[in-house]
Image 1 (cartoon, one colour):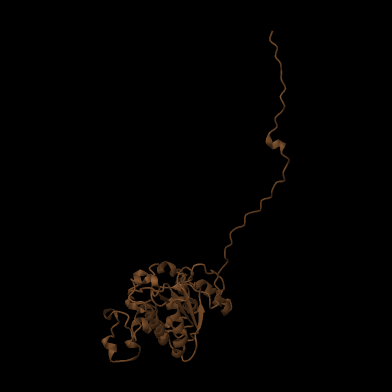
Image 2 (cartoon, rainbow, N blue to C red; image 1 turned 90 degrees about the vertical axis):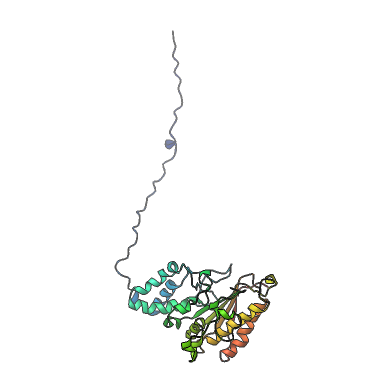
Length: 307
C-alpha cells in the first residue's frame, strides 16, 4: 500500500507584493517648444541696445585668435587689454565669415547699422600668415573697399614670419633694403611722374585710409636674434632691423588724425621679454612713435612674456 505524504511549503510571495506601496510620481506634461509669434521688432529697440546685439553677433569668434596659450577666454569689449579674434586671409573664410556677413543682406537699414560694427569690432591682420596667401600681391586690407577701411579700429602686425626671407607683400616702401631687388615693388609708369600715395606699394597704400585706427597689436611669433637661430638666419640683427622698419612705416603711414592710442605687444611663451626683438619694438614704439605721431606718446600694453 502506497502512502502519500503531503508536505507543506511556505508560500513564496512575489517581490512586488513584499514591497510597500510607493506613491505614484506625477509626471508633468511636456512643454511644447517655443515658437516665435510674428516678427521681432528689432528696430524698435534703442540704438545702443541694437549696437550691442550687432557687436555680439558680428564678432568673428570662429576666426583664429591671436592670444597666447593659457590666456583668459572671457572677452570684455570695453577693456582694451583683451585680445579680439583676428580676421585674416584664409581659404576657409567662406565658411567662417559667410554666416556673419549674411546679415548685411537682410535689409538696407540693417546693413547701414551693421557694417560699421563689423569692421570696427574685429581685429584685421595687415600681412597674411596662411601659406596659401603668404606671397600674394593683395593683402587683406587691399581687398576691402576704402569705405570700410576707414571704419577699422584694430590692426594686427605679426612678426617672425619669413624671418629668413620676408615675403614680397611685406614691402611698405621707403628705405626698404631688406627685400631682394627683384622682390621690391616697382612704381608704375603712370604714377612715376606724380606724387602722393601713387608711388606707395599696395600694402602701404591701404594704411593711409585707416583714419579710425585706435589700437595696433604687435604679435611676436619668434625672435630670430636668439642663439637657437644661429646658422639659419641671415644675420643676428637682420630681422630686428626689419621689424623696426615695419613698425616705423606703419606709424608713418597711418594718418595723424587717426586716434591711435594703444600698442599691444604680445607673443608666444617662447619669446623672452628681455630678448633683442622685444626690446627694439619697445624702443621704436616709445621713442620714434612719439616723434612720428606729433609728440603723442603711445601706451604700450604688455602681454604674457616669459623671462
